[in-house]
Length: 297
Image (tube, helix red, strand yellow):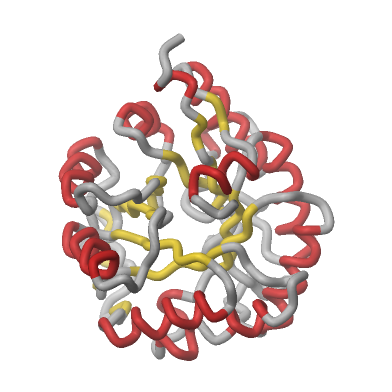
């Protein structure tokens, strides 16, 4: 087996995002449910947990620091996963308010996150589905340079690392500028976000992925995962592995009901990812191996 075939592949679990339970009732909302899924996914082969704090009864976004903190406490009581809580994206318009919970969480070593995401683009979020039209209109996700700086500074103040999220070629170029300015250190964990529903992003296709990857900052250390908002991530897995990438997926992005007769849990989705990674000649990274790959050791 060649050297590249021995490469360890990071799996990040995107456990819930803002997904409802209409298609899959197993989407976790409460801290207990997220912690349960995290422990099961760790056993299946995940290395990173990304989660959105949600109201346990309704699934609505919950921005309370204590809800984020309680989730982290419960996850850490049962796993060694790296923890990557959301900043809330479109639910909070002001970047300072959007990131405020991260320094608050960082004040307690028991709740300090390992990383937090910063989106490097202003986008029209309005999802479009052929035959149904635009599902939402006039939803703009604003990320001016000043706001990006605010979020980066707050995350670093918390002792956490920045997860740079790329939605298009412009945000890939923005990453290069932030590295040039010294605002982000290397290695810089990077997420390549693809979506067939969001027209301002690259589509979740081989062409969409390959049209963005050449614009990753040349000569920089930016280990990256890909994710597919609103669709199955598996069709792109082998392509991403061959290009040197890692994987982020979960019930937050897609219901994965095609995996079996019953709606799957997040751990089953991760287990299928591990099966496919191994079939391609690679191995899933443990959390400690992910820390080494990302320079967090």
